[in-house]
Image (cartoon, rainbow, N blue to C red):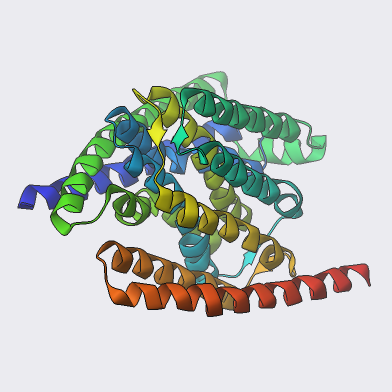
Length: 363
């Protein structure tokens, strides 16, 4: 491991974050021209844009026959999206949750996790599996956009007043060109950043004795989730809390269906899914998604104490991965503490909160 390893990592992360920021700005403004609601923008354009680093890294990894890094990046990013990003964002400002998320998008996120886990149960993700996942994200996106287009005329009129659509034809043309250039520039930065990050992360994994899966679940996952983190925190601070939560849920759907779908399609051979990912990381990812439901519908908000709970679990999960990978005995103790004490206690708490919320809604 040399100084260039850290240069690759730093340059890769910087290009990814910068590229995602430019891409999101340009794509969001383009979407606003169509009068799409803030929640749908968060679930689609912003979520897909901030997930572009995961797409670039996982596709590059799969194409280079580094399947563990591709799988670890997606699973780790989804776990980080909920536990780390929602946790930190809720600590800064309690989040309001839309009813649509509870009734449609979070259940779809859970279903996508179960679908991906089921397709990978045989130990591989083939091109056919990738085609199924990619077809699902196309269907979801078309459905969301069409649903948004059927908003009331009053809502659309209000959004049109705030968008550049009422500018002169010349101004609209300039806005389209500028935003399109931003999108293309963002994509170019993401491609370059993904190359540097994959190279640096692979070298770091070998030097530290960590597996590609663990590096993907931790270092790369956190790095590629930085755009989501920055976007959600900024949206929460500015009061755009629909975008903050929608960004996280939409990114999770995009990671599973589009990122893994594309990675499986471009991989020279079927992506091998490790036994550790199947028996531990996939279940954790699905459990984290399921945990959103009772927390979300207890008052349709995420309070600071719930954000702290999410964040604490992410710290414990990451510590377990590192200790387990380095064969530390304390990893077993931490794993048992999470499995037999923390998780059951949290499950009981969530069930109680859910029952209370349902009773309150009925009365």
